Image 1 (cartoon, one colour):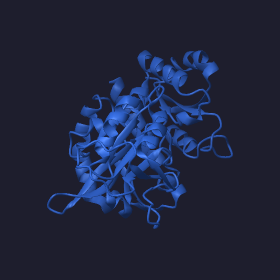
Image 2 (cartoon, rainbow, N blue to C red):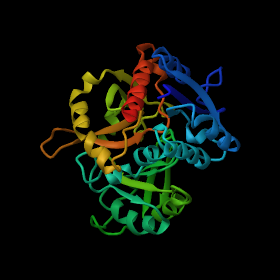
Image 3 (cartoon, rainbow, N blue to C red):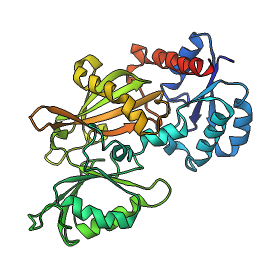
Length: 349
């Protein structure tokens, strides 16, 4: 074992600080070095992929990916190819492209719809025909939320409701002429369309590689706030309570849309933490039995059980490049370093 870890970053992007790095990258590097290991940052460019592979493959035991795929000017294909080659060569990936795609894609909700974490009336559309055939039926049951697989900060996440009472019964296919009200999470702005117009607009979300829309029930208790667990490996580190703005149509939990954030210790949400910890083996199994990501988040919304108790519904998992700069003073980078070294050491035994 070389006791050496490389951290991959991308040049540029809104997540960079004055030194050209993400604010949490160098703290991770320093924490790894403090454990007596070698660590360095390598910037990825598509045209350097062969040289990067040759430089990294025999020098390091593992890689940590700290690249938001949106910051790669030509997409993630070349980057993911390089990570996969390094993993095949024997490096421990934190996280591998497979883990990022399996955990981070929006259709994780569909894969988990058979569990207590996600309602069973949650669907995924991978092409325009499926969207046209099925969304008018699901909307007949009540308000829905459509989530595109790409984007961030609420872009392409739409709350959809009929704008007028309809005579259709639940399970009927609503006419494409049905007037609907659509609210986008990115800024809570409202648009009015016919159902047919909106479906045609949403076809762009299911096009291209990894194009997809997830269709799930709207949960009114989102107004009470979204609850995000930040984890390092299997360990919950802190919980963020994200309460949407007070306006009537607001449902977005992003800072950009005016949501208010509160950071709590996991013990403040012990019931949720206990339920999530119990579900972790099931989550890993349903998502392919792959390793749990190094740094990731799980977002939950409140609902009611049949007997009026609180229920927690999974709304999203993020793991491609989760930041934690707000808690560097609490030493989270040291927990990340220890978990990364533990993963490498366990794999090398």
